[in-house]
Length: 239
Image (tube, rainbow, N blue to C red; front, side, top):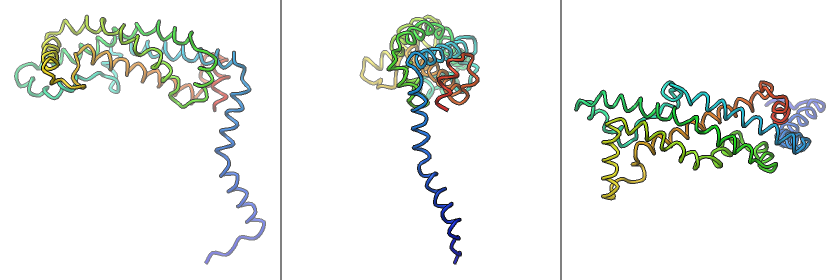
């Protein structure tokens, strides 16, 4: 049986355990105290700067050739209903059509994404002090959730006609949409069967918010890397 620790060592060990037990609470209170010390104008200005920067970076990365097509994580796949038939269609001689559609849906998303810049900036400008402090004290994806909540619906309206303009030029996309419409008329479509332009628009928005989230994670993990002194000050208080 292990010998008991001498009195002094035992007291040190107990003190160490006590500190470890309360450390998370202390860290939480310290972070909130640092946030509270920031003025409302500091918090809002720093966050607005961060959001504008992150949104611009996301749009720039995705709204160019190969922004989606060249990114293994964000490349937009064919709709599930069509993807399940891919092998059969290729055997039937539609291999080139499938390949053209795969590239086309990603090109459509790349062309639509630049339309997001204006609405994302408008969302930033509409931010209140309450919004700013809630985001700063929130989770690691609170910025991303703010953008999605403010802009997803209006962005879908902007993306859809641009995506449709590209996909309607692809013969296989037209055929697929025809089948979707027929299935819907017969009540056979289900929630997962949508027209090609709706599928692409939804996935393009997912990719945009994912990329904004990546920019947010970079900033939270390394606020000193931010170009703005105010952004560094605000996000540095969260470290």
